[in-house]
Image (tube, rainbow, N blue to C red; front, side):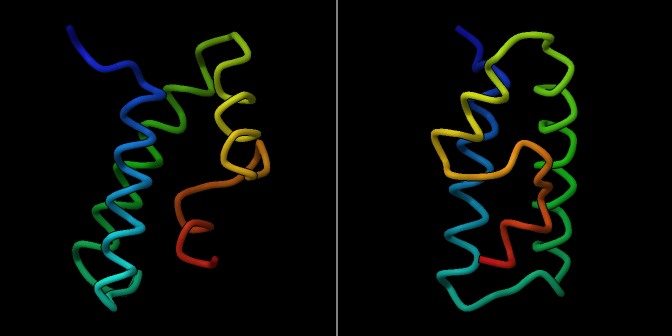
Length: 74
C-alpha cells in the first residue's frame, strides 16, 4: 500500500524536526532538500480539493498558508 500525500507530509515534517534536533539548519544542502520535498508535497496536498490539507494544518497547529521554510522558523 502506498503512502498518502498527508502521510508523506508527516514523514517529511518529522525529517525536518530531526534535522533541526541534530543542530542543523536551513542553510545546508540537506535543509534545502527537505524544504523542496515538503513544498512539493504541500502543493500536492493543497490540490486535493478536500479538507485533508486543512485538517493536517489544524492537527499540527499550523496556518493553512504555511510553507516548508516556516518549519525551520519554529
